[in-house]
Amino acid sequence: MLQTNTKPSSTILSARRSTMLIFLVCGLGVASWAPIVPYAKERLGFNDANLGLLLLLMGAGALLMMPITGILIRKHGSKKLILSAIILLSIILPLLLIMDTPLTMGLTLFIFGAAIGTIDVAMNAQAINIERHYSKHIMSSFHGLFSLGGILGPLFMGGMLKFDLQPIVAIGSISILLLLIALSQYQTLLSSDQESTTTEKTKFSWPGSAVIFLGLMCFIVFLAEGSILDWSAVFLKDIKNFDAAIAGAGYAAFSIAMTAMRLLGDKFVDKVSPQKIIIFGSAISAAGYLVAVFSPWGWLSLAGFVLVGLGAANIVPVLFSAAGKVKDVPASVSLPAVTTIGYTGSLAGPAGIGFIAYYSSLSVAFCVIAGLLLLVSISYRQK
View 1 (tube, one colour):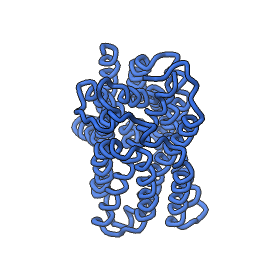
View 2 (cartoon, helix red, strand yellow; view 1 turned 60 degrees about the horizontal axis):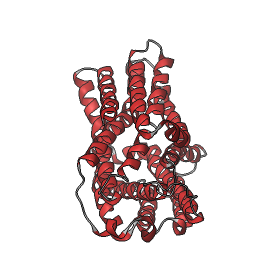
View 3 (cartoon, helix red, strand yellow; view 1 turned 60 degrees about the vertical axis):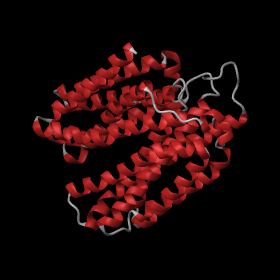
């Protein structure tokens, strides 16, 4: 439960700042991979299909480590896991530019995904425990820093490459930055004694129906977000006749809207209530998809992607926060379960959308996503 009528201590305030920076590190780490994908593709001589299969290994590493991280948190706390995983991430990032065979590249991507999956669960565990010391919702601000890292990562990498810096030097600089941030913030993260009770550390329980429900809601929202990443540019180019050079504007519009809304989201959640954020947010996102599909004007389709970002921005933070408060289920059990189910949506969902698009059209696939988001709204309304 959130504490009331108690001002957070300086220890908690410091832990909050440090955890926000860890979310930034995770966002930077994930996003820094995107600009070097073309280099990896060229080095390996892969086509799009081969690259897509290889990228699945990154997701597999993340999904494997998420439930394992929950077990490790109960034994060692999230603080040590965060530092260990960021050290591993800092080592792995430059290797993504060096590996020159499918086997070594696949293994490196698997480890990269495992590091990201570990950081993701562990930093959210920190955030949930910090939020318990507040009388208000603060989870959105953490996720806002992750989204901000997702925007800054390609900008940093792209900027360094633009000035003719060697790719290995550019990605190495990012790795050093991530490591320095993690080392500087490690001491002020919550220790295992501060972040969980003895009962949570020793008692094991299987996720119940409430946890599965939250996970399925996350699955749909992650599917909707992942589909913007993978399919918005194709949609704008092939369906709305955008020039290929600016087809990425859809994802950019979505990302900026989501980041801004998450950074402001805590105030909205406190004023409106977490339940209404999910009910109305998913409905707004569904409307955004429908606007993008049925708009006769390109600029209005971009506005649709903005609506998707605005509506979806605070749903996952609210669901993660709820996962940490499920009755009789430790956060170290519920959070990895919800995270794993949710991230399955971001991996398998876009592939499913491609399947629907192949047999019908991408517009129909986007309408299916809108329907699923409306299902989230209806389901949570009846919860």
